Length: 215
Image 1 (cartoon, one colour):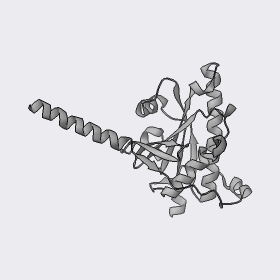
Image 2 (spheres, rainbow, N blue to C red):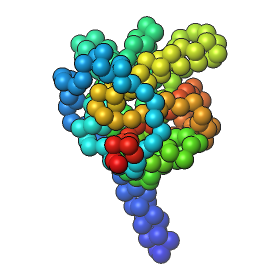
Image 3 (cartoon, helix red, strand yellow):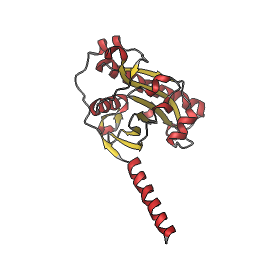
Image 4 (tube, rainbow, N blue to C red):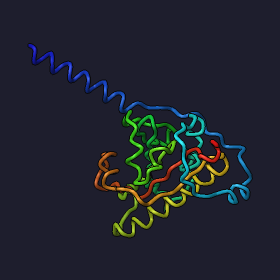
């Protein structure tokens, strides 16, 4: 009887933790107007690593993710970033001080996978743990059709480049800073995200507030 009680208690904790880990967070409607003029934004686009540990608002996070690779033509399921044959192989994971999340573009929502601060897994540099958000770009090679993994990686990297530039431009427009990064431990990230063999970590990108602005 005692063993049965222990089993039921353990099962209860497991179910509770699973429920927390899979919490769906609806994001605010993204702001699709305003911002700085395009040419001014291009002029101010830059990479910066001088982060302070400050949280993005829910609206900023919503706008950031929509700008990165959100749906801008719902009737055709088209995105803000182009992809070859509209195969949309890139999935965005993100680490914040509040945990690990998966961005669901079709619902414009987040799936919380963990409530632990896992920012350090997203890169090898010290500043990664201070960035408000670390975006992790994962490609599903099964969506890239036939061809070698080498050719698929080139395509996936190109898609990440489009998304990364969208993020840079959003940050330049909104007074945030960002840096696109290749120095990452892909195996460590894949293990933490519990990725399938056909899913490949490609790049990561940090976003947040600048020390210079804070000073």
